[in-house]
Image (cartoon, rainbow over all chains, first blue to last red):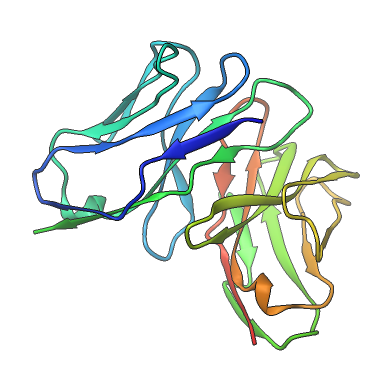
Length: 114
Length: 111
C-alpha cells in the first residue's frame, strides 16, 4: 500500500541554520504531496503542496520539490527562525478515487534555539 | 468563517464511559474524516465520510462509531472508553482534490 517515510526527529537547530527534513514515499502513479505543520497546542496547517512531478511548492520560506525519480519530497528552508519550531508532517493523497485516506508520515519535531 | 470546529478541546473520562466528540464545518465540504494522533505514530485514520449518509472505516476504527446525517456535522462516538483511546483527535474536511482543513483537536485522556 501507499506509505510515507520521513526522517526521525527530533531536530534541533540554531536560528538562521539551514533546514532539511527528508521525506520519501511509496505510491501508485503520481499522488499529490503535502507538507503540514503543527505548532504546539494547535491542529495541522497546510504548509505547501505539489501535485505533479517537478512541481515546487513554497510558502513562508519553505520549499519542497516533487521528485518522481527518487520518490522524494524533501522540505528545506535556508534560514530557520525560533517561530519555525513545530512538528512537520509529510503526506500524500493517493490518486485512486473512493478512498479518503491521506497518508501521513510520523512527523518530525523541529526545535530552533535563539 | 469558523472553518472546522471541534468540541470539546479537552476531556477526561473514566474507563467504560461513553462520549461524543463533535466536529462541525461551515465550508460545505463533501469529505470529513477523523484521525487520532499518538506519539511516534503520526496520524491514523479512524473513520471518514464522502458525503451525508455515507461513512466508511479507516485504519483504526475499532471502538469508535460515526454518523453523517448532515453535511455540516460528523460526530465521533466512543462506545466504552479504554485507556488505549487516550489520544489527540483531529477532524478534517476537504472538497474534491483540495488539501484537507484540520480542526484544532480534542485532547482526550481516559483513566
